[in-house]
Length: 258
Image (cartoon, rainbow, N blue to C red):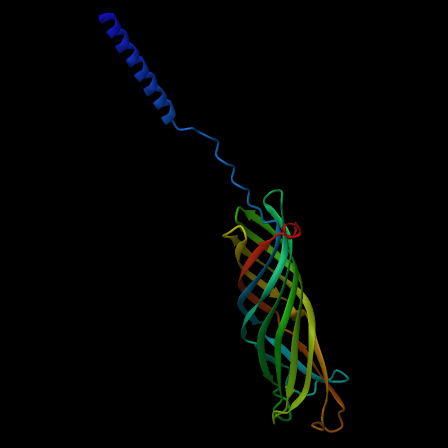
């Protein structure tokens, strides 16, 4: 009987030990390989909007007749076109390669209101010129260096802006007026940061080099100057500096086609 009891106790002890060992094995954590984080890429199309400010270099205006002779003595009028709030929308495409470099295209269209007035000291009466810039567009290539979700870039291309030049006499009557679009170059750079897979913020400086262009206008004298049928005013357009902050949304053409 004693032997049977010893066998029963031994069997129970063995079963308890096996159960405890199995419990210990079940409690051990199971290690698995961590999932690979997706690689961030700037490649893709984007659209966005921006706000900022603009200011212009000094501007020179010289009224001349059909033969190119200045209408008034005393030299040209030189004036500052001041500053303006700007705003508009933008869109483009980025391609990241090699693997930290980026090339792309970007277009923007915006509005600015730069205005300046100058007086001609040699005029027989008080004459002034008011010049205004308003709508503009830029088409540029971008080249940048990628640091994960940060992008430092330079850009350059062409710009088109609308200007209006008006000459008034002393009574405030319009003497000459012209409105036209002028082409020039655009160059600048900036920084962009992607805070989300689809959204990014940017800060940018862009220079519009209108100081290399001339706006010519023609108008009827309306009897204000006897014996003169037409008169012309040549204006050297100022270079325009712009700074802006923008918000872009990235999207994929191919996902829309699926």
